Image 1 (spheres, rainbow, N blue to C red):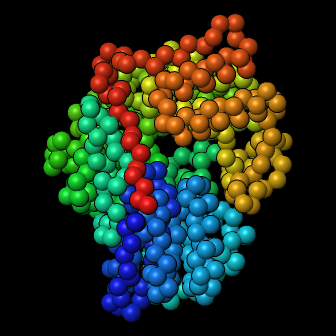
Image 2: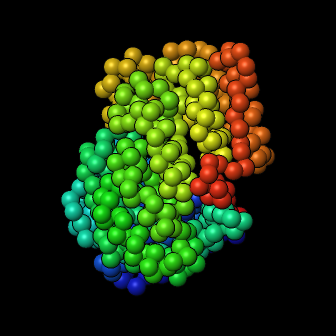
Image 3: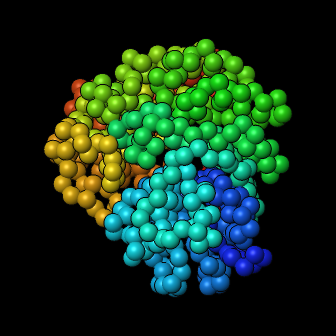
Length: 464
């Protein structure tokens, strides 16, 4: 049985906000617009399909429904859910909002959804719900907004979601957002296609108010979901200082680009003292040519230096990878394995990372890159991505094999070391290395990191 709640009408207007996927966290992209809608006197019900069911009786009584689509997976799931709602209530106004709302709009607008909101969506959604704007073309709002503390009432409790395992304790976690957009324009990232290098801060009091709220709800750890927490370093560090002063036992994780790790290297020791346990950083690959094409703003040498900076600060670094692009070779994947081994990073790697294939959605900045264009074939409307071909058949086969290993391991909840060892053997064979690659999953990392290497996520509990 899911967390099924009826829609209660107070103002005469009822809107349902639906999340399909937010990386295992209680959805902040539901809580933020819920605050704006409720502040405007609109009765709002919140549903998270990642952990609960959609109450059909509630769908029959609402006046509009909006699906949150902050990422590609969420968008694909939302399209399917919206079609079911459309079948049930053909005349019900349906909206998509968030970073991916405009992806596939030519296919979905009119047939599935009536309104699409990108960027700073709260105010336009209120106008839409109140009937102040007519449904129509995609609305992209990038103006500076005054935000309210996200309203998490009606969402499943934090205990339902992913927890952080740290020092033998499963810590209740919550996601908080301090900024929207990003100052950078990495070619493969969906954010520049909407924000084009703009950054919008949520605001000091709002963020601290949300942190106070989630702590009251039981949170012991906070994930800042910002694309880059150090896009505005003075602002972000101020948030950490005040949050730590109020809640000394609270821990954090952040996402930061390699170049910002190095640019702000003097901040990391203090951030460690303020409770930052680990930092996620998009390393992507160990091929400098690919990093340049993707406009990542860093080199492989910078990545090595970033590892040292974080180790010296006592903060665990969790790099993310994009190993497969059209021109990848099996030897490139072997080089990633060697990098992981050389820097004791294997315990930080989720095995699925080793099988990730470049996603090229509609509007991607990569579409104009000559290196990418020659590999493009057609747009997959159902998959909401461009289909491309590998230059090397051997690489295509390797990617499929690694993907199958990751999927099978996930299904049986195999331990990371066993899965990565299986991947190592496949990569060694494909790359034709003389000696099988050594991918060590050490129990302890470099001096100064120690226990922090044992941080990892427990899956969310899905209600049935």
